[in-house]
Length: 400
Ligand SMILES: Cc1cc2nc3c(=O)[nH]c(=O)nc-3n(C[C@H](O)[C@H](O)[C@H](O)COP(=O)(O)OP(=O)(O)OC[C@H]3O[C@@H](n4cnc5c(N)ncnc54)[C@H](O)[C@@H]3O)c2cc1C
Image (cartoon, rainbow, N blue to C red; front, top):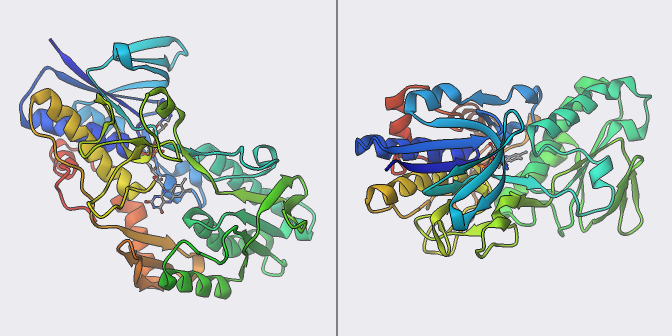
């Protein structure tokens, strides 16, 4: 009887799960295992670039790649996972409810920004979490020049000084000058709850972020918590107000809500606990990968972060292991000892660190060159050629 691996999501982890599963099945010349991806669209949306301009073009087609590798694609949005019956219920392209049976399920539906944390975020803040919301932000920024010159027009507040907040903030001074003219008194303010800029990062990385902020004129308000956001701007818990027509929310990323439909332990961000084979605890037929997986990367206590770098490798291992379990082949334990960060710092350049202790290895133009090669080449799908795709889909192929 034919077997079926069903992958939910066509992001970094879903795409690589599909290619890796298809690769192992091909390697074993097994003809009766199907690999199907269900996602709203057959394209990779390149989320790490959503702070850039022309955001709607930051996608890559996946159908040609799936076609040459034998992966089936179903356009749909999944609403239910019925683990007891091994079924997935989804709404197809024609908005009809459909059901598909799986023998192995790989959950790869990513994450989203929780906009319910603070009053007014849902109505008055922008974000760059998904391509649609990032496009709305871009359109708004492009329209600012039509508004009357005022401090509120010229001020952008970025709520949250994590990696996404930093990359967005550093990009903005040059972008605002271009949009509003060199003479405009533009201001970019990062509102950060922590005691200092980049408090969660190594001293070396923090120093670089501070230097870049000073040179670019990005202000940091630290020990600052947002009370609410309205059409006039941001009000902080201490009563201070920052007048702004553009408040960008970057805090509070949560794993996709489908994780809650599987009765298994989850972390504070909703990620499902998985074992070394990336099977969800207590559910041998269900694998979690990418931003929905809480996975140990080594034996030193480190866990995968919600990053592309982890999603790509997690995807390769999840796909391989789901296929391995149907082929009665030993799974490959997920391992990702190396951890690097490469942070775009706008016109200043970038910074590249290695290790969980974030040792700074490159800065400014050298790091920027590397950043560009990562975001415009390394994380993109491989060429739509079976041999090339399968070579890179091997979980043990060199990565970073
Ligand atoms: C602004 C921003 C900047 C970032 N910068 C970096 C960076 O510099 N470096 C880095 O490593 N990482 C970065 N990240 C994080 C990185 O983008 C994510 O970790 C990565 O996209 C996770 O991959 P994923 O496959 O788990 O999820 P995603 O890439 O989000 O893919 C999820 C997939 O699931 C689909 N899906 C969702 N719900 C359903 C459903 N109900 N039914 C069917 N399909 C569904 C989606 O359509 C999509 O195809 C950034 C993220 C953002 C938002």
